[in-house]
Amino acid sequence: MRACLDAGAAGYLGKGVLPEELWRAVRTVALGGRSVEPMLQARLDLHIAGADAEAEIRAQLLAGRRGNVLRLLLEGHSPAEIAATLPITKKHVDKKIAEIKTLLGVDTPIRIYRLCRELGLVDD
Image (cartoon, rainbow, N blue to C red; front, side, top):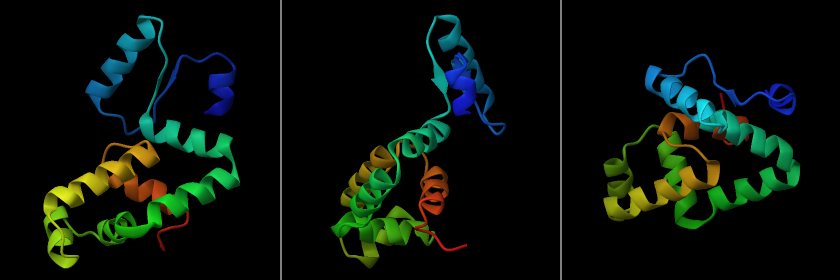
């Protein structure tokens, strides 16, 4: 992916992209922009940043209440279940999940899982 983008590609999407994401990417590129699937962009950013940045992201993800929420989320618990387990409000859980998504540059729980697996935070 990096080689394609370095060679001048205006976008890069994985094979599992949804039709509406494909359409959005085509429009963005047609208007002169760049479109890279968020999960792939996050991987690229981590690769470019190197091992030190990965260690920093791991530390931020696992710190305090955010780490507790992430561990339970990676085990497959819903936000409501996490709130009951910790115990904190669901609103607080949602806030921590939003922080995790921002740190990782992703927008869905499955993408959180995939990137955490790449960071070595999930055992297969």
